[in-house]
Image (cartoon, rainbow, N blue to C red; front, side, top):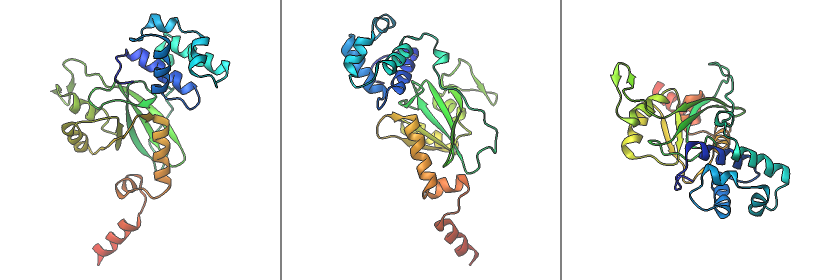
Length: 235
């Protein structure tokens, strides 16, 4: 979806509508929509899509589910479409890690670190995951951070997610990655676009299993390697 120019609102609607359909990601829905209307996709063209057009692209899905996705596609109240933020207080989830997902549509990890529309902030443990914040990544003009004007978007974005330990993204350049690491954040570039929910689930599985030493340290898990190193240090 990132290769086709879409407004933030349209990208968000398509992403959320895809989530309402079983086994469908934003890219699949966008492909189906482009078969019904010519590019570029606009508000007017979306308004002209009906249930029959959507059924043609997804013949195995029941009408009520398709209508729910269609209503999301045509809904102009974008703020109501964003996932709800969960209440969270520090210490609520022992053994958890805070992660940021670079996203254009709010549903998939589809954003480049330096140009994504927002960061979806999750607190993740082996048993629970909460969306605790949504941070707009656009840099206001003349922004002051620590009494300094920030004109480097990558510095600003790294500062924006400074409280996270991991950031997932579709792509990132070398200089930007260095600035992320400088903030103490572990950058992870996904090999292909996937939903945020799947990304979070995979992280939960890693936490529940045998997390790598850097992650084990963050969530306070003692690994055999760390235990051995401590014993050797003590002699």
